[in-house]
Image 1 (cartoon, rainbow, N blue to C red):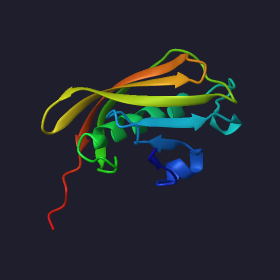
Image 2: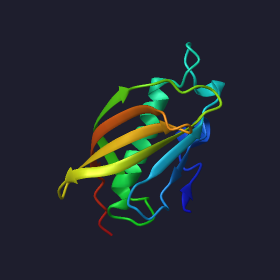
Image 3: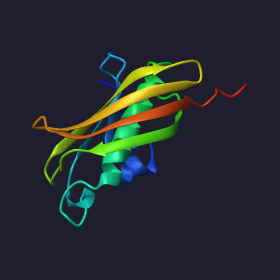
Amino acid sequence: MSEIRDETGAQRGLGYVIDVGRGDGSARCWLDVTSHHTNRHGVLHGGIASLLLDSAMGATGSLSVDPEGRAPFLTVSLTTQFLAPARDGTRVTATGRITGGGRSLLFIAGELVADDGTTIATASGVFKRVPPRAG
């Protein structure tokens, strides 16, 4: 398994992990929800749910050109649908899946699922690869 940990300030601060080593072209991003991740209603904050989806979807785009999942991609557009709450003590996992695209843009779907199988949120997005720098 190839995991990306503590790469960014967001990862260090929130404690999520990106898994790019399943070999199926889809990245996964998981988080063990604690009270540090919840809103005033005691459930996973929607902004954090969106961040997890965005991270998994961007890493999925990266896997399309880099087997280590580290080629940078930019989020052009992200739309999230919130379906169910996730509470403190739950592990949630976001997974990305490429649905289309061409040379410059990829269309990627995402799903955030709790450890009991409940779908917490879904997303669709447009992602653009950051052009490699000329050496």
